[in-house]
Each structure stands twice: as structure tokens, then as C-alpha cells.
Image (cartoon, rainbow, N blue to C red; front, side):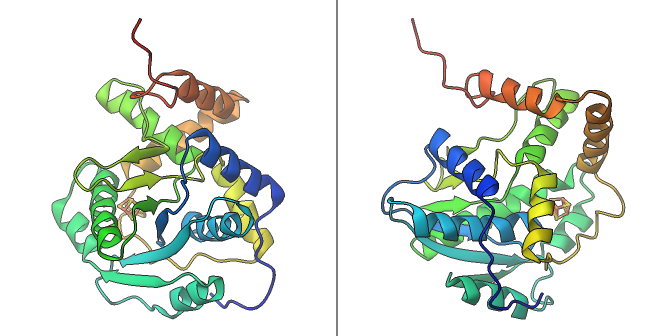
Length: 252
Ligand code: SF4
């Protein structure tokens, strides 16, 4: 991806949803040092732009760094990542890791879950090393809905990942500021901003994963039931934590 001096300011609508999520789930505190998980996909690229813009506008002061975990273990061209992070003025760390070889060799039925756990663990360790107390991930609302459906179909419970949580082992907070944004809106924003993803292609995508099956199922359900996305979001918001995103039930 070639970067230039064009305006990369996210639209007001996208900024509004990020601000709303940050406020609703108390994601960012004064003095936080945030490490962005920069995979090079559309979600993490837009997340970086949004957090940079939030940093510029917010009265709450926080610092930003980024980390690219190269899942090809050092075979990927880093120059677009260097260019992007230097354009934003966000220091970048690169970690080489054989994620793709590991997930292919393991032959898991749900490789995305293993992949996400590996990456989250690496990011948390790196955050501690570089003095960050928060890791920011680019998950959006469609990711959350797919996870809730996968859990419903395979584990018998309607539960998604949390918009903000603290990892018990490291004490690192994990935040997902794009959690209220639909994937299509992210794609549209990337086109508007003239940005192209620069992530290495996952070898499992063409073979199909459980997540891609659930994604197809949800999109066909949504085509038949307009408003399904909003209903699923309301369901997540109205179920108390730890299963949904609502406030925990208070003891009587
Ligand atoms: S599609 Fe590939 S890269 Fe993405 S989470 Fe799944 S295994 Fe990891």
C-alpha cells in the first residue's frame, strides 16, 4: 500500500461509534499506554486511524504504539507497515511468529480460536515488554455476532467476547474500540479513505473455516430478516456480563 499525504481522517459517523464504544465500555483512562494489534487487515488499519484521531481530539491523554505479529515468521514485506506507522507517528514493533505453520499443522476444527489466542498472548507479552498497559484489537460488530452464533451452535450458550476486559495472568486490559461498527461500514470507509489491506493472506481462508460458515449463515439470515444486526446488538447489550455486554446483575 502506498501512503501519501492525503487526508486519512475517519468520517464523523465512524468516529462517533468509536467514541460511543470507548465511553460505554470505559475503555480508555488518563495515562493509558495502548498497544494496537496491527495485522494489516482493514479492521486494524482503521482502528489505528481512529485511535490516532481520538488521541488528537480527546481531553483524556493516552499514548499509542503498534505491534505487527508477522504470521509468516519473517517472510512478509514490512515496508508498508513501516510507512503506515511512520505516517501516523505511531512507533511500531514487529514480532516474527510461525502462526500460519502452527495452525496448519495442528489441523484444529476451529483454527481461528487458536490463532486469536496465540496472537492475544503474544500481544500481551509484548505490551508488558514495551511498557503498555492496554492492548487494542480491531474486532467489529460482525465479529462479535459471529462469535455469539458460533458459541450458540457449538457450545450451547449465547456469548461473545467482551468489548473490554482485563487478562487475569498479565493484568493487561484488552479493548475493542470498533465493537459497535458493522463490517460493511469499515469496508466503505477504507474505500473512501483510499486504503488497501496489507495483511498476509491466511492459508486457511480458501479452505473455509467454521467462522466463514457462520458468517455466510448470518448474512443469509440478515437478508431475510432486516434489522437482525440491530436485534443481535440489543441482545448482547441487554444480557448482563459475563455472558452479554450489560452491567452485571447486582445482588439483592
Ligand atoms: S482466518 Fe486465519 S488468520 Fe484469521 S483468525 Fe482464522 S486462522 Fe487466524
